[in-house]
Length: 241
Ligand SMILES: Cc1cc2nc3c(=O)[nH]c(=O)nc-3n(C[C@H](O)[C@H](O)[C@H](O)COP(=O)(O)O)c2cc1C
Image 1 (cartoon, rainbow, N blue to C red):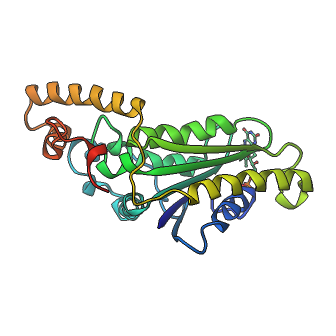
Image 2: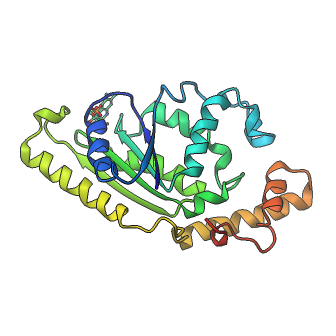
């Protein structure tokens, strides 16, 4: 199986440690590709909107976005990790996610995303872990991913792994390993089930694209939806993996 990991910092701190514990269960069975931000997507989206209006290949940052997109599409399991920075994901992770606005369902979602599984892991000192997860989950779910498992930890006391109590370290490790083992038992030759919320979003956007297409047959997103067959009878969750 293939795993792609998206790290919201380059720091080898607590978030890195949590990710390593999670991945330990997969070292013997998975091909793992990792991205560290900002290094692997160093620039901000400048709002040129050429990806929305025209072609994603016109993005000034395409060389970075393309590598990330390839990993997103080819991997069976997507792992996102982030500390809470002032109650949210890091600016570096947000900058990467902004580059994939054109993959949100109201634009040109990749059909492959509907069958993916994802895990989002966050940690914080005391508060803000949940809103950090939400920042990432919002993008994942609007990309079409239904199967998203999350783990959020409150360190309470210190922000250095080695200074946490043994009890704390053991409890975190136990939860991470339990989720990793659950994810390891999945048969990845079968697509993840698309949930009702994702289907509802798809059908709402399909209505929108149909009316946009009526007004202008040349509208970029409509042409994409039409070419995929989604305006007609084809559904991304029924396509073979
Ligand atoms: C800029 C910044 C903002 C932070 N904001 C929060 C916060 O809002 N809530 C919180 O509980 N911890 C906050 N923290 C602590 C981090 O979530 C995290 O626990 C700490 O950075 C250790 O993780 P790391 O070693 O992976 O960087 C913040 C840390 C930094 C550097």
